[in-house]
Image (cartoon, rainbow, N blue to C red; front, side, top):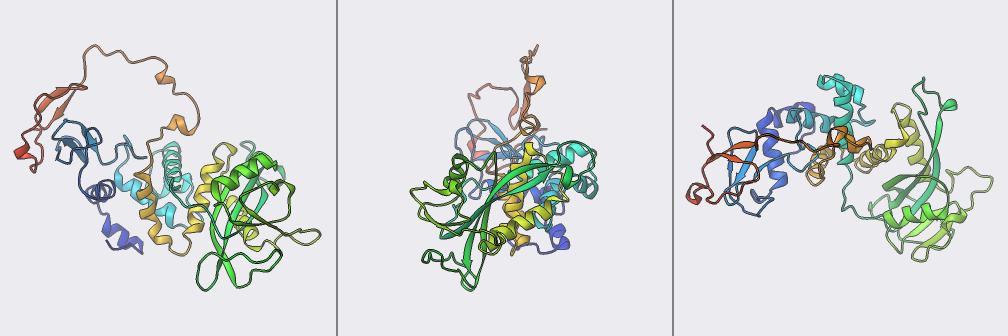
Length: 361
């Protein structure tokens, strides 16, 4: 499938809901429909429900967005696709206010929730840890402490730890470790990892290193005492002393400089700082092939479970305080007629008609 390199090409590739649904179908079931209930591979495409398939064997209905970050969405798929494209390709990212204006959304809350869900889909749960030679350091970042006008001198501070691979400028491969104190010349920054930590204590720093950096990696740091005691890593400290920190640790300080510059135009809150850091990491790691990041966003999104608004804001849903009592059981329309929710079909649809779409007339 050709990659879209311009807005016009993107619009031609996804002109309507049907093309968006077909893309999600191919990403979710690359080898054909697979029922999440029984594992069957034969299903009817229902005409009464948008982009929903009914399993021939067990009668379970599954849409192309079920179980993903787009689970039970009321927004058109084209809005999701355009939002993912804008957030993945824009060099500085897209704020909720910008998305609301660009996509014509009805409220700021809708745009904010859309952006938050996409940010959470940018992290690949199976991503490989950093390896080779890695620069690591901590820095303070400003964040909004209240609703007043944002000024750096009057804002709060949060501690962020970062690590960046040092790769060879010519081969683009991770650097081979050298003797202690040796300079790494003709290099460039590779993949990055960022996270907010509560303090500079060894417990928090060691947890970040073990979660993001492969054992055996050479860690180039500023000689902070919290890096001591790591048995599975090779520590190469560069004591900064009176010199500027970016001299011995060039690449991680360049990442921090870009991060702080980006944060000036972003409404950062401590509660959601990790999702914003993951968005920055996603764009930085794909800075040389930004236009293919859109497929990565939605491809990863189909492997992430659904997340609700109340989960994002970390509050209990007040509507789930007591169970809903129904006077009559719910029924839904299937390819073979109406059936009660939760009821098992004793006779599934005729297997001989498995290749025909289900009718709901």
